[in-house]
Length: 185
Image (cartoon, rainbow, N blue to C red; front, side, top):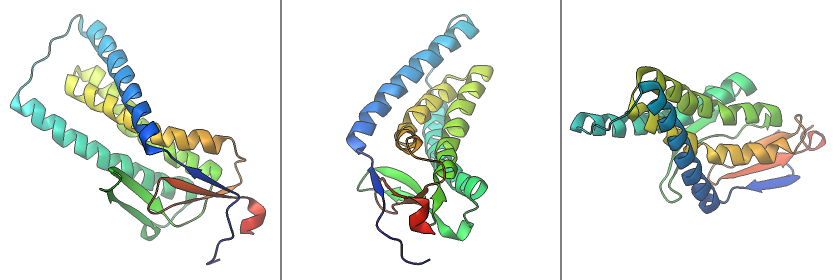
């Protein structure tokens, strides 16, 4: 099937709204994680050094890249999308990193792929940071938890639809095209 019919629904993501929610969630995650860190460490101090700042910058870039790569891994694992049909990049005009495919995925499959990066680059690093007592890793995880807000906004919209409907990601915009199964048959 080369040509798709008109979608039943289009889900547009409002980036300014998502950015505001992301800042709020990042702040909330940071406060919660730092309080837990404070309790676990029985106190806390902040030690800034050139190395810690460098690790923060490198870690942030690395985790953003990993976030997008985990979307691709989710497309592969959950929807069977071939690697050659996936693209990862940065849209400097919109100020976002992205992972996309032109393949249709079921609603259930894409929802799993949307949340995989949250768990792997947000929650897992938070647990590691708390375990090893690393403030840098804790702050990075809070940033990536807040950075997953756009994925949660898409997830919330998709959750309203049946699992067997099909979704196509827009390759350039934060937009999803939704198709009923009868339109893709």
